[in-house]
Every structure is written in C-alpha cells, then in structure tokens.
Length: 217
Image (cartoon, rainbow, N blue to C red; front, top):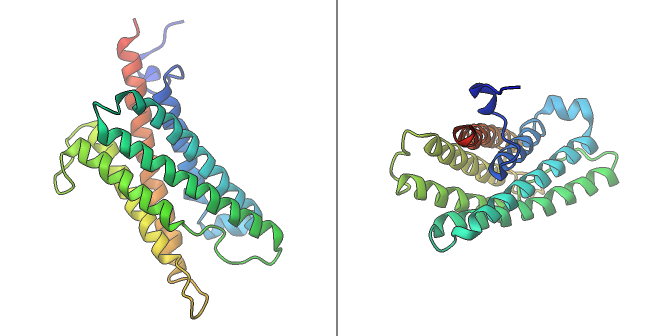
C-alpha cells in the first residue's frame, strides 16, 4: 500500500525527532487543560494533579530524546546541546514539583489551592533553553526568526518559556499572607505557555516527518 505525501507529513515513527514532537505535544496538552477551572471542577484536584504529573513525565521523556539527539553535535552546535541540557534539567524540576502537588492533593480531600505551582528553577531553565534555541536559529534575541519552520518552532517555544516564567511569578506565595501573587495569571500563563509549546511541537512533528518523507522512495 502506498503512502501519500500528506500522510507521510505527519507519520514517521521510525524517527526519534518524531517521537520527541509527539511526547512534547502530549505533555503540552496536559499542561493546557490542567489549569482550566472547568477541567479542575470536572475531574477534581487529585486527577488534575495527576494530569500535571503525567505532563511533566512526557516533557522529560521528550527532552531526554532531544538531548540525546543533540549530544553527538555538542562540539559542532554548542548552543543546541546547551539548550537541550537546560531544557532537560528544567523538566526534572517540574517532575519534582508536580509529584509534590500530586501527593498534596491526594493527601488532603479538601485541597483547594493550586494543584501545581510552576517551579522557579524549572522556569529559569526553560527560559535559558528557549533563549539559546532562539539565538541559534535567529542569530540573536533581538532579531526576527527566519521565515522557516525551524524559525517558527524556536519562536513558539520561546513564547511558551516566557509564559511559564510569568506563571511562576503569579504562583509565588507571599510569605506575609500565604497566598499566591495572582492565581489567574499563574493559570492563564500556564495554559497559554502550553498552547505555545503545543504549536511548536506540531510544527516539529511535521518537520521531522517531512524529512522522513523526502528521503523515502
């Protein structure tokens, strides 16, 4: 059975880059729906916290694949390797944060606070990773990305990293009152950042699959 070009453009499971994109997209979906009040009210805090934790595991799996793919090029494309390394470390911080939120939610039936507070260190790692990847593609943070799929991926990911950083600021707990700076900001920026990551993942998915299609005879 022959495979059309359109089908090959979204299906290339033999490529590690394709799996990286799929895992990032799945993780992004988890972080996209998790902060939505309607989803929290529908499934409850325990399930919501589990969705965040699952999303962080998917992010780490994707980041590990991406880091491994960049490792052989660490001498030729240092920014690429450092970006992947910072991203992987950031996802590990999120693993810890989401697991802590999961245990808190399960251990307290009346748990009504944010089920996931963006980890400050993880957010910083994401910002570093996104900035390095953007610089490698665009040639500088102040420059426009090239009008290519790679440029669009870098720009989308950087927007997502900035949004996660803003989410972490909104979720910061004030010592005096014990309340978050801005819960609405934290939730909205988490969802918006995840949406940006999802866009980047889908672009990366098509980019990896198209490369597969181009080489297939």
